[in-house]
Image 1 (tube, rainbow, N blue to C red):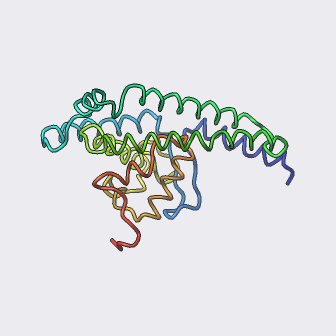
Image 2 (cartoon, helix red, strand yellow):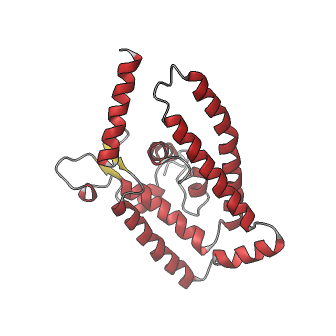
Image 3 (cartoon, rainbow, N blue to C red):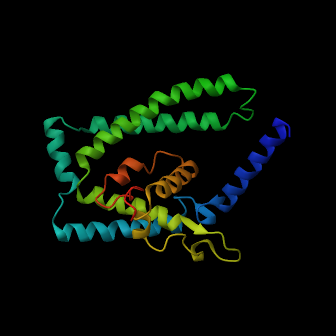
Amino acid sequence: MEEKEIQQIEDEVKLREIENNYRLITDSPWGKIRIYRDSARWVSEIALSEYYKERTRLIIEGKYPLAEQLAKVFEERGIWTENDDQEMMDVSDDLRELESKKDKIKDKVKDKKRVEKIDAELEPMYRKFFDLAARKERLFGETVDTMAEVQRRFTLLWAAVRKDENGSRCQDLTPVFDSIDAVKDLEKDEFDYILKKANEFWGGVGVTESFLEGSPEGPTSSSDGE
């Protein structure tokens, strides 16, 4: 098959994904599954609802401080400031712009040098973004807001991953995982697989493994045998 035909097939697949709002995975450990976009209204609403429920529960529990309380202390002491947040946002915007530019290169074989040039620019930018994100996660890792956000991100994975069943509305399809806790209890290799597949479709920098694993209820290591 010629490169032009391959590119045409890839473009058609991308178009179907845009129209359907999901990506079909035919060879997952759970059989044929669909991964819906995290921005799909019904997916984001389910996740946001879990965020507020978890946030309320944690506030009542009183075990963790609010992020705004820590942020004020960190700002006063210069540990983490608004400038750091702005830097993260700027890097994230630059990453999206470059990734978009790369996606628009139709013939990646013919324009291999352009692709390599963009990849060379992306590498240090991703490194910088994840360094900043990791630092912020260490500082704010145990606040009401962060723990609620962890719950939201696990919920995104639970809500967006559905069995490939014909004749059903997207939100009525059977979830691949029985519950949000079932996502948390996945063996590490299974969790890494579904997280990678979701991130490839969602855009990458939204849900990070380190963030989820940093929570009290992160994915189970495959060596635990649980």
